Amino acid sequence: MPSSRSASLTSRNSEVGPRLRHPAASLAYKLALAPLLVAQAIVTRRQAPLLPEAAGPREGRVGESGGSPLRVLIAGDSSAAGVGVANQDNAVAGHLVRALHRHADRSIVWALRAKSGLTTRGVHALLEAEPPAPVEVAVVITGVNDVIDQIAPCRAVRHRAALADWLLDEGLARHVVFAPLPPIHRFPLLPEPLRRVLGDDARRHDRSLARWAATRRDVSHIEIALDLNGEVMASDGFHPGEPVYRVCGEALAAHVARTVGHA
Image 1 (cartoon, helix red, strand yellow):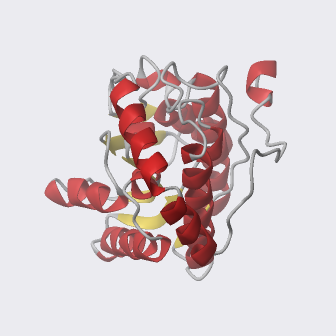
Image 2 (tube, helix red, strand yellow):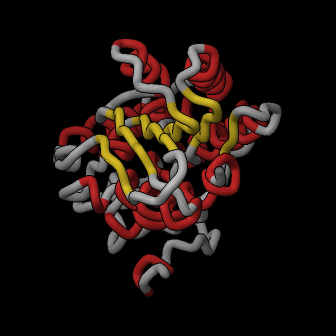
């Protein structure tokens, strides 16, 4: 059960400023504010503390129950790597595999491949450089760096499709789960209007991802309601804290168990 602190992660849908749903409106807004947005991005990047990736094993086994284990790959960017917490037990990977063991009633063999700063295309390159062992399900956690690098949503979807198709065609996964983009408009580190602009971009990316995933039987996308604030975020105000990792890991585990988890 989530603690009272993590329960506050449920979204209340309150926002500051207008939401720019139409790409043309978003582009016009960005162009009008371009000098300010660039200045804010530079200052924010310089001032943001550089947190390490979580320490601890990046592969292992949870549980010794009979029958075949459920094999899981977790791949992604700094959030997959556990930036914001001290060890992998408190990161998304730790919470995911422990919750998945409970949900699926199977032992879990897992591996984590993640690195800070990677876009979706960068995650694909990381995995291609050293292909992982075959698994039943790959959980991919990317997207924030696609937004930061201003990769268009349609292009980001093509990169996700290329990654998923490679994992599936090479026999490295039977199903690929894409985690949602976080509500960037709730990141305490980011000043306005940069926070609002990146948040609107993240929503567009996530909607495009969800629409594409809905056309596939071997790919899925999960929604996780999060209302972020300084209490549940890491000390840098940009990465998740343990309460966020716990909620996300448990939500992903429940989705994986429903989709592929039962023997």
